Each structure stands twice: as structure tokens, then as C-alpha cells.
Amino acid sequence: MNGKKILGYLTIVFFIFFEVYAGVRLLTNPVEFTNSVVVIFGIVMIIIGLVSIIRAIQAKASGMFAYRLGLWGGILDLVIGVLCAFFSTKVVGLFPVLVMIYGIIMVISGIHKIRNYLVLKDFGVNRSWLIVVSAILTIVLGIVVFLNPFSATGAAWTYTGIFLIVEGVVDLFTFIFSFFL
Image (cartoon, rainbow, N blue to C red):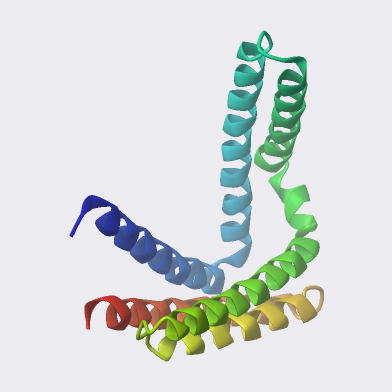
């Protein structure tokens, strides 16, 4: 097995375990978990913004358009990062809107999983039916999250946590059966 395959497998396993971890954290302390995710996102955006601004200043001599685009993009990233890192409770107040967007992304992700399954099946690559189960769980969770962002927040956190754990376990079995058996 080459290094790229091993890195790909490790990346998949990392995301599967993060999915389960996020589900457990959402069940045990959803507000703290959400706050910490927003702060971490803010710190990452601050770093990305600063790097973009530095690169833009360095690229100033090569072209004015690249400079302006990089500079304004970096400033925007920096502002978003500062808002998330230092005003995380206010950002969490916007969470119902973010949850709706997350629900849409999950539905798209589930549809993408089904499409990948069908494409691989058309090419004769034998894949497990667990991929379809994982895709259906992802779509159902996405719909639940999208339709219920404002009311029954506790129930939404509980469902999201349970579905993330179940989806992570199903994804792990899918990974094992698809690649190793």
C-alpha cells in the first residue's frame, strides 16, 4: 500500500471518529460544544485572513487585481474570524440559521453518497449496501435539522447527536467492508 492510500484511509477514519465524537459531545453538552467549534473556526479564519493579507501585500508588485482580491478576501476572513473567536455567544445566537444551512449541506451530502454508490456500481466496483444506509441517514438527519431549527432545540441536539453517532458507526462499517473485506 502506498503512502497516499494510507493517508486517505487515515483521513476517512479520522472524520468517522470525529463524527462520533461530535455526536457524543452534542448529547452531553451541546452549548459548550457549539461555542468551542465557533471559537476554533474563528481562530482558523483569523490565521487564513492574516496569511491572505500577507500574500496580497507580497503579490502587490505582480498585479493590482490579485492584490485587491487577496487583500479584501483576507480582511473579510479576518473580520469573520474575530467575530467568531471573540463574540462566539453572539454567533451562536445566529445558530438556527446556520443549522438550516447545515441541514441543506447534509441532504446534499447524502445525495452525493448515493450518486457515488451508483457511479461505482455502474463501473463494476462492488460496494457495500451500507453506503446507501449511510446516505439515507444523512438525508433524513439533514431534513430533520432543516425543518426544526427553531423549536425543540434540545430535541434537535439529541437527534443530531444520535444520528451523528449512528452515521459514524455505519460509515466505519462501510469503510471496513468496502476496503478490507
